[in-house]
Length: 613
Image 1: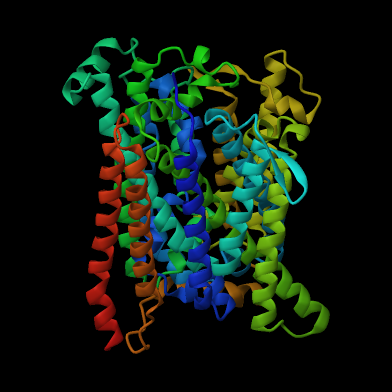
Image 2 (image 1 turned 180 degrees about the vertical axis):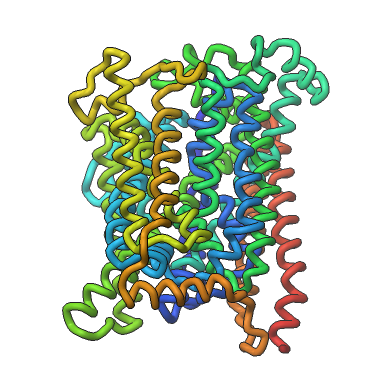
């Protein structure tokens, strides 16, 4: 019978939440200015930034939706989810360096410098609202699945006189922890907690991978691999995606290139390091991790396909039972204690994505909306203290709204599915003017907004025409979400490929045609010339500047937190001794402690050298 969490697991999860909050308190003293709060003062060590850059792309989706995709499609999922590696290499050669040279304080300042203040306001409107919605959806998705899979969805809790279901209590606690440490520590807290979350995620994946094949092979990893090859469904170990046309690879690949080079949180990581040469190290490490980590969590899911071929009967209450593939494996092969680590890893992955969004959203609202509006009204810019307080208030407000969205998701009905499909309507048009605008500067000030608008219009027009040819409704916005199956030039096309590729082609074509337009306005010429000069000027660290020890202290904090994680697992070894798989808690404890000690030893000399410079 599949296990559920017990008191030991809940203790591990609770202690992990306390650690995350503590990290926020510790690094809150790093923030004296808004530059510290939103970009770490430009002094984030490249190692921390690289880990944060990588892990911020993860969420519970990797353990849920992506695991279900791997369970259904097999080894092709490994290739699909490893496409981030070549995308990061584009950052290695081109975009990491360019983002560092922009010398920004918020991601959307790029739009003001490259295009116009109006472009920034336009993008802010189309970025803040959907991303706060995504925050709420992330909290909701995580907690609904965790509550269902681990058996406390039917429980009720009394919190401050209010009766909450297990799912609601989960959303409240997860949301408040997320808001608290992001509000307190700013980008430094995000970096430290992301690093801790990477350690937890890596630890959980490192243990469950060999254990999955030991179970599959009745004690032999080799026999487990042999059994997978022998009993896997036909085509499961090939490179063909189930129910996905060949064009899906192209559409998804281009989307990954955009997402991993010019998404706003990607830009923030690159321009927050001291030296543009650090961006190459970041991109190279992320590319390597993008090849390694998908293997570590997808390979166990492939074993789960053979071990649990009928997940529908095991999880009848889930709309998509295959999404329980990873967690089903964990519940059946891991001991209590390690299960708490798995839950923590799921929370960690989601929080690392959500805290990143909260921080850059607050930066945009503060620097790109509050400051210019306040300056326009009063004639003077707000003080650093006022900006810092407004930024923290923005984190709190947006976090509370996200929690409210999570609480009301069921009543809103279908928001997650609608938002996912709607995102394909504007994500490519939004980011193509960014990825092209960094390398092609010979366009007028209006080219960003106009390209965005033309791309969205083209997507909608082509989609509605496709509906008419298929005899589907074409008289409402909802018609853009109806599934379609087309054959274009001999190639199968579904709604996703149609909208993504149409948006890519339409937006790119319009942007390139806009290079024929003339620049107008003295202010625009001056602004763009200054921007082009920055892009041509290397952004190296100031060797004469006094050493910033915050980065070293952040490394040391991560090392100590990893050791505490190991200590937590050591504590749960004793009550689990004698139970099946109890030794895995000991292995996990030793790995966590070893990782923490390695980090501390590696930074000891660095701290000594910088302290005496």
